[in-house]
Amino acid sequence: MTRFFFALALSLCSLAPAAQAQRFDFCEALWVTRNLIFDRAGYCFGSVLGQSLFDNSNCVTNTAAAPPEYDQIVQWARGDESRLGCQVNTSVPAWNSIRAVHAYYNQFQTTTVPVDGGYACWGYSGPNVPVHAGAATSTALLGQLQSGLSYSTTHYSVLDWRFITVSTGPGGQSIVTGWAPDYAFSGSSCAQEAG
Image 1: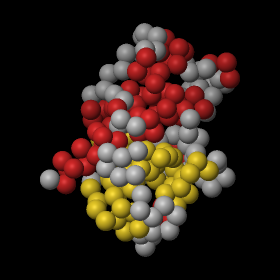
Image 2: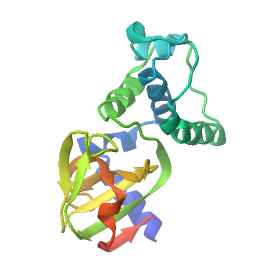
Image 3: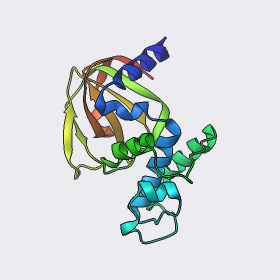
Image 4: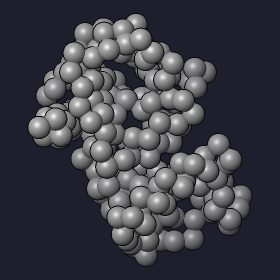
């Protein structure tokens, strides 16, 4: 029953722009987030899809290597792509849905990887939690989670940060999506949880 309510909440949240990534094709999202890391590390894409989606003008290497702090994220994405049998066609130019995935994830400074599952907290009661553009306090502050609001996450946590969507509740309006520090959630509680 809890899974039903969580799935219902995610589908309702996906109607709001801030939660848009939850409607994306999961394999496309994994491929984009993994390759966004390589793009930001200066990788020169050779595939038709890579060249049409990422800007090769600032590339410096033909070796796809992630900075050490992103190794785990790349491993998660590759593992999920393998487990799900993902087959993104890289021999064709970027199509609309993959461009939408790229635009969504590219707005955040820290790249995140979606998971096929998640967690939701409705009726959060705790201190205000800052929501940033990246997994660091030095990144832009986008908003905050406040007591009485709700949040959900459908992404892996990174560097002791959670990628969350703050909303007014199940089926309610999305307020902000971004990164929140794990430490801020200690001692907090939820009126209802799912996941």
